[in-house]
Every structure is written in structure tokens, then in C-alpha cells.
Image (cartoon, rainbow, N blue to C red):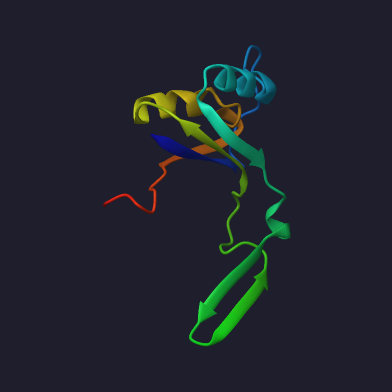
Length: 113
């Protein structure tokens, strides 16, 4: 099953500890295991554009859709056997300590409920 990892900043995150895996090592590991499908970092929230349609009006605003202290800094799409494996992959990500990693199953458009 595919899972999306939202890699988020967190003002209360911890500094890396000696022995923690860096992003290059994490990426090499999940790629070598065939778990990682694709992912990348994102430009800062200030570079976001939010698009909404309300009736016949198109509303385009600069910035993210929500004002928060945390931002989505990147994403990874992984393929795992189940949620437990996806959580283990997310827990090994360096941002699990320094930020937050949200794990969300992908819900294909052709799939039922």
C-alpha cells in the first residue's frame, strides 16, 4: 500500500543526536529496500499560492491555506506492506525527531471507501 509522508517542521522539535541517521542515509536505506517511490523538499510556505473557487469567483492568495507555526517542508511517497511498516519507515526519518512526519495512506481515485 502507498503512504504519503508529510515532512513537517516543528518549533518544539529536538536537535539531532549523535548516531541519528541523516537524510542521505535514510534515503539510501529506503531506496535500497525498494520502499521509497519518490519525494522531495518543498519551498518555504511563503512561496505557496492558495487557489479557491467560490461560485463563479476564483480566489488566488499568496501563502499557505492555514496560518500555523508548523509547515510542510517536504514529502515522500513510500510503498509498505502495512501501516506498521510505514510507521517504522517514518520513525527512522531524521525529521521525526527535528519536526514531525505525518503518515497518511494514499486513497486511489478508483478505490472504494
